[in-house]
Amino acid sequence: MFDLLFERAPDGRLYGEWLLSGLFWTLALAGLGWAIAFVVGVAVGVARTRAGGAAAVAARLYVELFRNIPLLVQLFLWYFVLPELLPAAAGTWLKQMPPPWGAFLPALLCLGFYTAARVAEQVRAGIEALPRGQGEAAAALGLSRATVFRRILLPQALRMIVPTLTSEVMNIYKNTSVALTIGVIELTAQARQISETTFQTFAAFGWATVIYLALALVAYQAMELVDRRLQIPGLQPARPAKLRARSLFARARSWFARARFVGAGERS
Image (tube, rainbow, N blue to C red; front, side):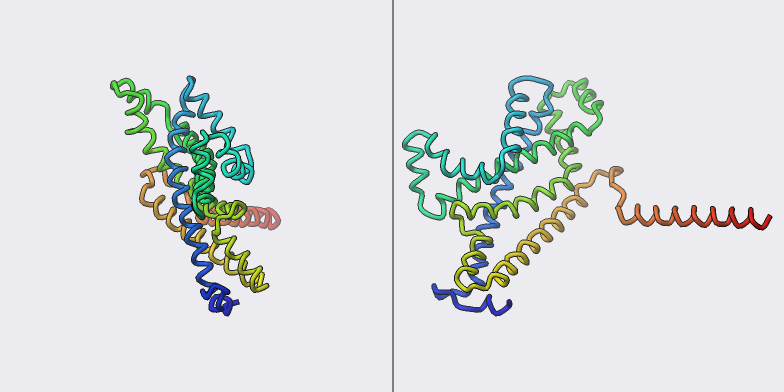
């Protein structure tokens, strides 16, 4: 398996370099896609908290549309259908973009807007979890609605939802693999090319699996660090390990108490 990385490919490069090239495009898609998802998701999530109006309706339609259509179908719509819906000049420009940008741009937009719908729901949940009195008190002080969200509600909500956003950060790395269906040579596509060239399927996809796992662990650790740095004092959740330890200790103490009571009853 290790030898595969140092074998020469038909183009003269090492197969390890092929995987590094795929990793670069995976990171580019995931990083830029997350930037789009976060900005759009926060804006849509704030709009989702409005009681009514065109913004709330548009935000809900956006979330329902992008969240309920399979990602692969959305990718094909961005790549094959969007150029036909645009004005002739824009559509022609998009279809004639040189590789890999002609496939990279639709994949980037697809990943960004799809993930934004998921982020929006988490932002909405974070805002609605805050006490209503905070917004009402700020409004009583004469702050505008935009200032209330920007200065009071949104900073707290974003700090609260960091653990749930961790899943979305990890997912966007994995979702980049669908881009191979429209010609983006990212990590999974490179692994498939290596498999078809060398017939070492296990080694090729084994290394891709290791790289994806490493990306997920790095993303998890980075988000955990962000969570620790931004955690709101007094709202730290109890750690599961401690909760399990206390639960087991409480059960053991209860069992021993019952056993002692039964034993005392038998002796009497």
